[in-house]
Length: 201
Image (cartoon, rainbow, N blue to C red):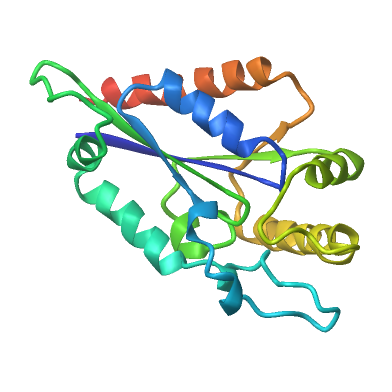
């Protein structure tokens, strides 16, 4: 049994969730684990000196739960998928490569998770585009006035710097490119890796 773990990271509203879902639809025997699913309850998220909720830190996430889910997939990806209705009964003639797509804004900042990735991609967009996209989305709870400039963007820059000190092998993607162009490039790269794994036998 061969496995491949893909990390799709990026800044808020950079397009990582859309790209990950599109890739999942094109890759058989794949599934997605999204970091945003592991946020702690709002009451557990601390507030900084400016009164801003500190969501953009690893402590705001149940990373232990996320790692348990990922390790469950690593233990038996076929069973993991079947329990979620994502794969038919296996065929003994198939040379399957099971692909896990992990997406999130801090996936490369958590060292135990970062160490698991076979391929790493990071979507980036300019400040003005990011701010415009962020302002058009509805969050629960909603962003307070000044939150993007006072907290979100400075934390992105801090987390990006930290990520770059941890990660060496990462492919940066221009989030302003057409979605289909990004998907085509990413899909081609992942398929090449899948083919390489199949040929190892």
